[in-house]
Image (cartoon, rainbow, N blue to C red; front, side):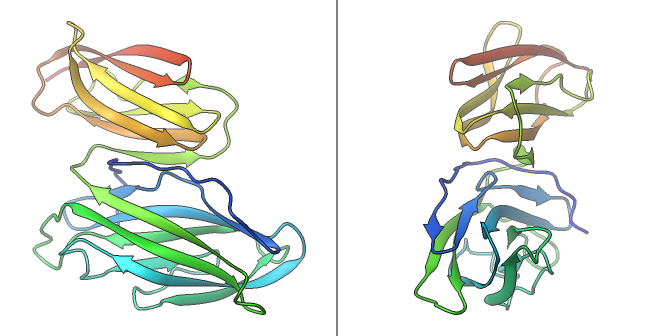
Length: 247
């Protein structure tokens, strides 16, 4: 079982792209990592919507570029029906009024076979969504993935009404804690941790995010016990909260 502990390296939102009768967008941070001592994956999410009626749409993995060591399992696709093997490059299903969930997910596997050596790096796939009845009507989206340690971010919800920076939990903590925040619109987001002297000790988020609620992990390994501050900036919004590291 894959334990979802997420990692952030670079996050990129997506504007809707339109084709005749449907839309295909990225709806989460472009990079979401889960990992533990035995397994690791990166998950990117997309949304395929048909405004009216029902259309049969084929999802095709057209390009796969992965870091060396990631290709033991490669990548895999999931839709509302099922998750498919890494050897499945094309999936066809009806979308629209006949479906209960239009969410798609694309999984990158970045641990090798036993002894599960952690393999940092980056990768990407290009996904084409095309009408089965008319393949010339299609939309392509690229989904990226990268790893640089175990600090990260995960989108919890894509619908929020206001900016919010929540108190970390647990607090006090040793050595890891979670921080939740919400942004009501797509914007550049900065989430940073400072010590009592105002010195920056960790950058948790630094890049564009789509609207939503997010959860990020802060690992204070190597830092001394004491009080720290974390600051969220997005557009004109700024908020700061305290947290206590106890070792």
